[in-house]
Image (cartoon, rainbow, N blue to C red):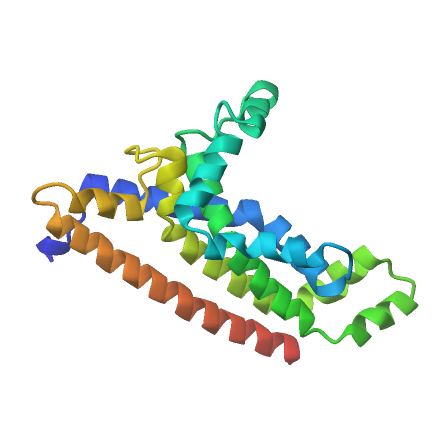
Length: 232
């Protein structure tokens, strides 16, 4: 048991990871649902391009995504400097930047899960609501969204798990700062680079595996339970 007792630095990294991942999912959820709805229900010029851009983080090296964020959202970047001047909001070298990097990397998983769920909804139900005078947004919030909640829940949990494991984009965008941006994967990497850090790296590795398994199992169980309730 003592071999798996976490040190203060390891607890700090775990807590920061949970905090960052939570904000990454909360911040990206509204946009994820909106983009999934657009891709599932509308046909328009450039739809393939939008779909490609959404899924780009899945195929790009994470370092490329992190560097792009650094160029755009850094203190000297066009978006980052504007946010700094107008809102006093800075993503550079802070947990907010880590959350942004995690959100970008997890966004495709969230969108895909929600989109597949929306596409499985019987559009006849939506059409019936519209014939009764409901506007498109009301149809979405009263008919579509309740029916796709299993997919939303699955997407949220998968995005949260992906955020917990984010490494490349985070370290490129906001560096590896203890207490600020050193999340679980970065702390594990740091421990592998210092003498005597093997035990700590092993503990964090085990924690990472357990969290990933819990997320996957939890996503499946909760999704099935909610789907069963909706069908019932």
